[in-house]
Amino acid sequence: GPRSGFAVRVYLPATLPLLRHALADGHCRPVGGIGFAVTPGLRVEYDGADDEDLEYLALHDAALASLRLIATSGADPVRVVLAADTSGEAVDLAVAELADLDRAAVRLTGAVPWSAVAAVHLDGGDAADAVTAAAAVIDAADLDDPDAAVTVGNAEDIELAWYAPSEISYLLSELGREDGPDGG
Image 1 (cartoon, rainbow, N blue to C red):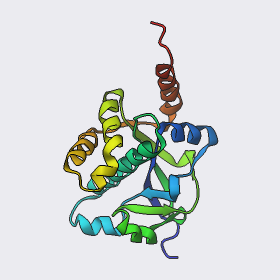
Image 2: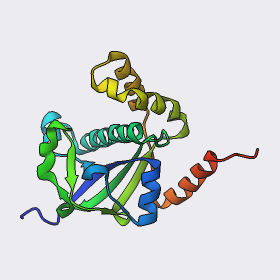
Image 3: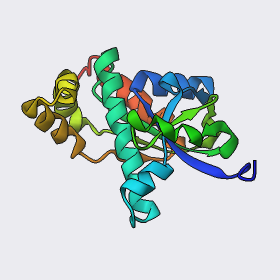
């Protein structure tokens, strides 16, 4: 099509185990093939917002999806979002029609190579309690339980930290040490 070759920044929700897997495999295959990006639907919903604001909203939606993955998988309470620059061919933007699912959701037609990852966003240790609490009640929040919504909101208010992809193997080894006895 006329838009072939264009680059799309996609935000891929993940968990620490999925991040370790992606690093080891050299590619990331998002759960359900779903990622988040600045879609036409997102632009319409936030008419007049600049690209940076829209990117932030897509990242936010991916962080919420990561929280859902933590809730269903029981992974460590660390939200993880991979920001990747993919060629347009790899992303089916027509599936911004996943709008019922999410305003920023897109479907990825294949795995994203680790080399395409531009940044990794994840929670610092100070977020663990809030993320654990939010993961426990996210289903209730989806069903409009007001207390649960507040708990999820508390986690959403915590900004994810930014890391360069080159820092991730070191970071994961540090996190791995925290899991074990510290011997101190």
